[in-house]
Length: 383
Ligand code: SF4
Image 1: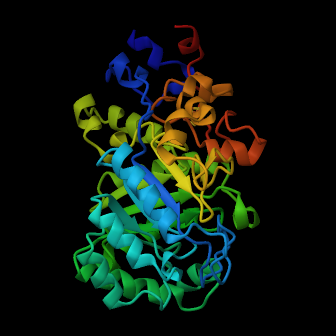
Image 2 (image 1 turned 180 degrees about the vertical axis):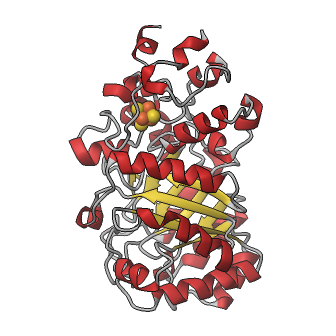
């Protein structure tokens, strides 16, 4: 039974550390509600980030969801999803909407959890952050793509954005709000991982660090990804940092880090119970359309912000109905529908690969993760 975890391609796991079969063979399907709703309130933003998924623009558009439409969607979230569902208000820059605090007040009154992902501009001030704290914001995330101010500002397209980000991080920390730092990983900065961690550890100490592996969509097509082999090495370097990290670490659209993380823990003799307690295991199975959903400024619904396949329109349809019943979402949730190695890999239920990256590369969201080097055990497919 345990033998199925070991073959020539999987020499990183030692036989003396057996794994329960059920540990990897249990499907993790979020069929009833998402844990995270990424909600692009507007595409407007004063930054011009090189990898912007939203292809941001300067001013809000006429046909964005209006305040009342947004309230109705929040009602649906309250009534038909879980109390653990969290809305991440993002953009563009959500602060470009004049009704942002009306939306936040309504969300709070309805008892729906929310977080905010603002852009590091002068639109967000100490007073606004204080107001967000009073409104019960779960966390605020800021983007920081390098320990080097020039590199960060080059990516964000506006000078002194690095400096503004540090100022805002200090304010958020001083008000005891959970701070998440989001870092884009791409060809030019993946080698800076250790330096970036040291910088965060010394200067910011976020609550959580989220590393997002570039998806070549939106303006992100202009940037280069690391190769699959570079990503494999990156994942192992990240594990080394992660196990001693003083803050939480998660990855976005880098689901195969879960495989590296779990394998390395097993090799170090950690028990299944210990692995199950980690934040990486708790995020197992979450990927585009499974536990995650994305709402665009105009009300279109997508499996994630990086997978541009529309599954509904909130000016006509109900979010909870789309989430539960969309045939594309249902198919995306079950890794047994995936093609190539992600369809039979023994880590598919925990990982499953980025459906967004598969689509960006092949126009088929069910094809294999292009940046994973792993060779799954083939006979698992026939077990
Ligand atoms: S082959 Fe696919 S499912 Fe397996 S670890 Fe790689 S990306 Fe994940």
